[in-house]
Image 1 (tube, rainbow over the protein chains, first blue to last red):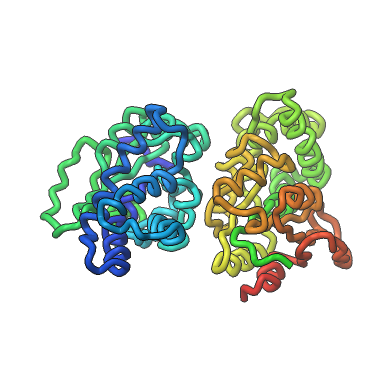
Image 2: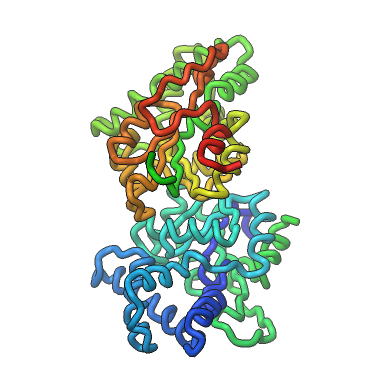
Length: 233
Length: 233
């Protein structure tokens, strides 16, 4: 076991906030006949392919707000909503700034904040993460975003960028995420890792939590559980 | 009068935190025979010349922590403290991460945070501003630093960088500072401006507040007063 880290960097979409539940609720209210679950899934499914286009330089640097909007324009057609005007599209695209936190996130982060520097390290752009923090009451110490490094996770530039900003040794930073691929990339850069189990990220019914990610330094049922495991109570 | 801004960007050293008082107190405790006021003044006096060296490209990009350290090495000699070892110098240099807020800052910022995005826009590096916020309990929504733009205020890149990150029109951002030069540069970029009167920035006895900066959109006696003038109570 390493010494305790001094900085905790959190993946946000799915790990800290419930993108699926928030989008299903908002588009379900706007368009009652829509299959809101399929719509949310379609929107999110194109997220990784679009970032990969940026990282393969098929697109110039493009922030997540703009990638979300490009995907939205396509899926509005697919779901028979092409009548939405510019103002309506812009407003709907900002749902990603208004995502709600998982029930344990705010209380867990408040505990962690007493002992650690806590920050998102998200592919979301800085304004998105700032507005999300205000909306969901996330008590970050600062906002770290892929936008600062002009590279998307899991590119090492993002994890190494945090080390450089804080003049930190790799083991002084712990990456916290609900996605193994993010943690594996962080670990390759020497960071500590904490896996958060989020079985409801894509909706559906909760399954029995099977905490099988023994490959990481910590495996947690929630951010509250992370705080407990790191000795904050 | 413009419409209300949506983002308030704060100069920090002198405007939000009391660098002079904090340094005088800390070095006065460490070295009781030292002229702590002269020491603090000497440290701060080289701040602008060093940043200008970076902006004239006589130095490569160098963060404030490192500029502070370069100045410290020189003044320790001048003040007869050259016996300090590496660890002591490093620790002393971090006093800039531990600056105390002016008495009105935290309460004023908390009020402003209910209606606006509030952020430092400081020449201090991101880790310095993050640690300072934790130390002084400054409730920023995000940390904006010259380091993100690789340019020091009053370079327009800093003010324009904020507009780009938030896709904001110039009048949607208000620069808040105790220094007219910072506000004049922000105004040249189209930002709104608020002057905060800080007669004790360089120590000494309070003078009668003469609020003479009518050239700016707002002139305030404190951050509490700014909150009042912007309708937050």
